[in-house]
Length: 317
Image (cartoon, rainbow, N blue to C red):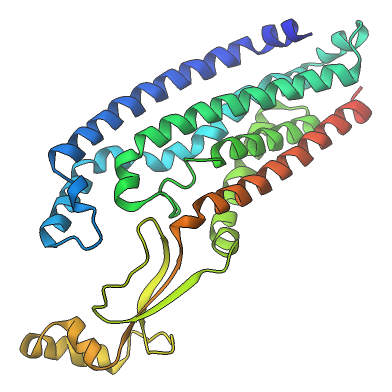
């Protein structure tokens, strides 16, 4: 049965390996290029607690130099979905073509057939996702040193525990749709249509509140700030009690008008008792957030795998 499963999935596995090879070539080559630029510009020594203007310029130069490379980072979020679609397709195709009936008429029971199929798909999805995670973590080394990896659309979705969890969720959605519809293309479309909105909705409405964010209210020009790697959710101006000042506040207009004659804009705000107001998630919560989000997506994936097992075993004939 294992040999037969390999024979049926070898095309998709070889395609996934080819895709992995292309991805690895790009990520390794571009990572080495970014790391070389990072060291040539001397960015490392500028990552202290209070970098000066010269260091700010160096970091900006680095960001500009690698912008053409980092612009593709958003597309890397599709990698777990791509592997999930490839690896889940053979089972859905079997259901569509009815070839599963041949296996069921041999010595293989429905339960054994389903268990081997689903475990193989899940294991391959995790293996490829973990390999991608290692590559993307290596790729982001200089970027994480500068800005951390907690903020959405940076490294949080590409590193740690999430890519395997996302991959399992995507393949589970596709298999569920395929089991019900017995059509490969519609199942793939549904997988994409569900995976992307759910991920975006979770990132926007759930992730920020997995733990209560920290609020920091400090005087203007204070050296205090969230530690490196924090996820800054809000950064604005407020009074000493944390009441956010609207953009129409006359203080801003007065300080903008007077800053040239009486000092900087920030010192003027400080004189008017305006405070810096920051809402953030500390970088120390990175792994806690990773664990909670990965656990939720993995749990949903397991539920869907159980549904596929039950549906195919009891409803498909």
